[in-house]
Length: 446
Image (tube, rainbow, N blue to C red; front, top):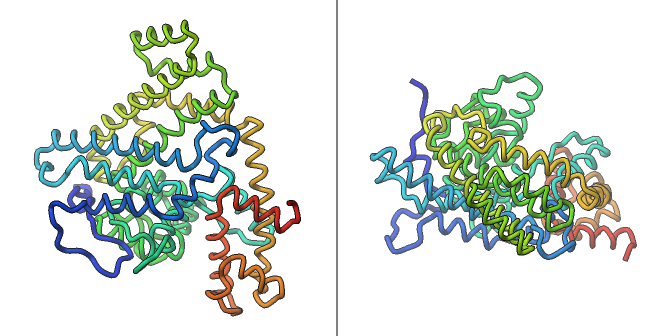
């Protein structure tokens, strides 16, 4: 019989990074997952998402989404997915009634969704590539991955009070871990040195070098199935079943919302958007939309179609989740819930159209090009401190990076790597506006 995870362990509320664990709780108190939601919501890393580009450059108009509004919408969808999945699981398996509370499942998934982009750098989807490209100029083949940076913030660097990171529950961190593997494992799979059991888990890496211990802590408490020998290097585990719901919430949101934003940004015309959303509508709903069109309320039509598409996608994903529950618990689910759902083709068309007509638009390419220029030159400037910490310029850079009191002017590989990591934490944590302002001041463009 295949190894199988169990829901009771998968919902562990043991906290990662905390020096103490609460053992007695009043029934009237907030549950541990509610506290996690607040910890993410009030974190400085989350607040900075309000000034980070989602797809369209900030300031174009007040309607289009930022990383912050996108994350809030994904969290709302994740809450619906968790609640509906919890209710159906209790109906499907009577023995789960004492283990699964739908409201808690909803909070776990929504909290993971709230944090899903917390490690992304400024300037949209190209920010990661911009950082990697700049590092290559300094002979550093160092991949930068927003998912791994997010896990680093949650478990190590984010607003530490006591212990490390935000000290979230294992269940929330498990749901957050879209790619529960280290960079070395993911690279070994890509190079053909390791045969992946499930390629979906290691398509990218989600665990940085310094976060291996935290990842092991989470995986052990949740009972995630290991995919590799636990040698401390090439670490990988199967996904937490709720990570599939977190992923689905993000997929639903950006595939549908990017088309809506494309319309309100003037890139996509109404008839084009109407054709894309029509597969999600019933005959009755299509007729209601025609009535709106006759009243020349095209913007209301787009809002209406977007809402229906989201709701029906949620229904399709939850049904797929329940249908494949056993595969999820055995770590056998090799496709996303979106790809396996009955709306897979319709949602793929939205994404393909966005790639062709939205992501390649002049406005989007402009902000991505700006990201390469700004982030690249900032990294070039800060690398002087990484490589030569005792130089005159480096003394000033250390102050800019808020590192003067933390790092001594030590030489050696480990000290250099520590400076490099700190610099990347600082760069990736910048908002678009702060990065641009810093670039202008350093280059004399005021």
